[in-house]
Image (cartoon, rainbow, N blue to C red; front, side):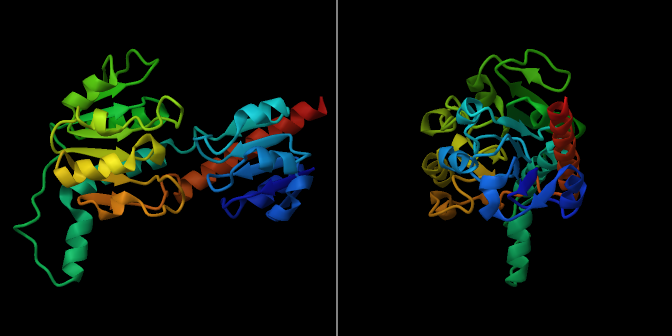
Length: 294
């Protein structure tokens, strides 16, 4: 059995998987691979699947599966798995760090100091304490962010299509209810037809004036042109994002907008998380091999 590691993982992963078969990172051998292990860079679309004629399983190291054509995989009898349990801490910590950074002007302060400026009076901080955080999507990561926010004495509101109660957030009946009350909005939803473009010129009108938006979910949940306009008008006080329409982004209107914080899709890229992802990948392959042998 050939296992293709198509994207960057922990350096120890190939050795861990060697007990189950031959392991390669040579993408030219896709047609030979029975199991393919990917992250966000590899797009498992119809063309890719048609080339991978021997593929029986694809494992996405991470949460989102929007780069995998799951319907076509199902038609071809290909098992699709992810490592959703692994990334919770890494992404929740990044989302919280982004909130702190924006309100404390950490990146602006650092950059200005390096330019020889002293913006002690110009940089006006605000505190997270007593502010309202609205979380759209109360899965593993959304809930992990919620209990971190509680430690900072924030009021936490949440919306999720099938979460009706939790100890960590006040559940709202609609997205609109969350948007209207929140000083901060953090997005934690998968990219689906219903969530694509959810944050747009119409929903942005529901935001409190000067609210901050954090996106560690998927870039296409936000209409970038509309977010840029909201930043320029002052409707949004700031926008922090780790996710984009493409990796890397091309000609994003956000680059010309004020009060932004940009990161290159590193939400899951902690040393600890890459180790956890490797453990889950190994477990999934072990289960596959065990089932196959019966």
